[in-house]
Structures are given as structure tokens and as C-alpha cells.
Image (cartoon, rainbow, N blue to C red; front, top):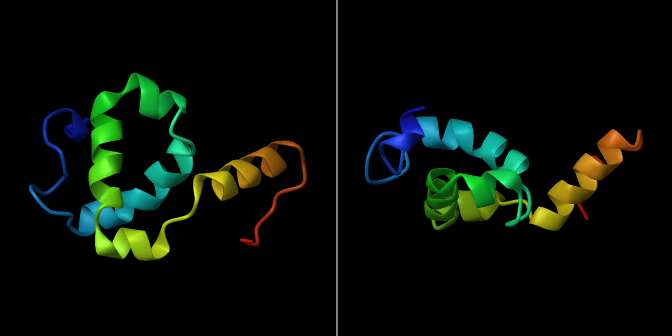
Length: 83
């Protein structure tokens, strides 16, 4: 995976591909203790760099809301609305 070699996909600052991938990483990573965040330091570093971006901060979903969504989805009661 390209993330193994460089911190942000196009280089030193987020580009369109970073913004396109960010929602998937944000939702998969969930809480800071998730498997992705613990076992893959490159993804954790990428995640931390992206969280510093103003555009990402404007649309960031708190980890507890992501966890609530996944928990509801797997129990048959997904919570689509943010608090």
C-alpha cells in the first residue's frame, strides 16, 4: 500500500486523494485503540496528520459517534443521525 512509504498520499500536504480516502479511514479507525490505530503505525501517523488539517477538522466525526453507529449497525439498530 502506498501509505507504507509516504506520510500523505500526494506528498507533504493533503491532496484530493487524501480527502477522498479520509472518510473511510476515519470510520474504520474509530477509537484510538482500534486495531488499525494500534497495529499499523503508518496509518496512525497518517490519521494524526489528517486530523490537523482545517478541512478535516470541520467535518470530523467524534469517535464515540462512529462507535455508536457501528454498534447499532451490527445489532440491527443503526444510528444514522449525529447527536
